[in-house]
Image (cartoon, rainbow, N blue to C red; front, side):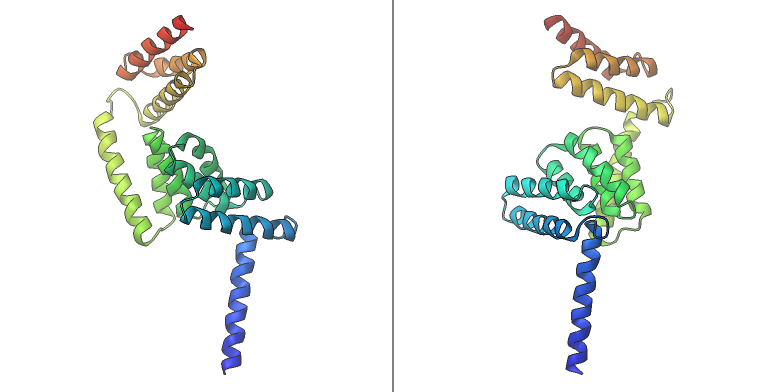
Length: 221
């Protein structure tokens, strides 16, 4: 009886390992590469738990280079970037994580967090809604609902009777990129996105404010 139980435990352990290897590309990528990437991922989590964030980030990036479509390193690196104030960089990673791990509510939740941190509230709301559609449980479900309620309250104060939801989302996106390029020192590129925003809502307060800042930056350059 004990032997049978041990055999079952061993079989279960082997199955769990194989399932994790499959998430890292087993069957598509050489097994030694998959195992090496998985080991780096596990080491990254250990470094993260110790507070060694630079080491954790480097290990996650190395793992991603080996298995670029593995969802776990993508998700972890995206989360790390959000938590260290680099949400803009995290958006692309987490968008890809949503593509390769669409059924996972955590992917869409973290994508929403990154979008929210960059000010793209309407896209963040959509990401949280997609996360809920994938039936999260426990604390994750509660956190998604909390964030959705907060976003909905914020957006209700920003709603404009003259703009449709799609127009409001397009305006938010154009303003985001206008501010982004202005902040990193490309005011003429910022002006291109501002013109998109002007075509949607030329008298919007943020459009007018950013327009002044962009023209001043161009004048000073």
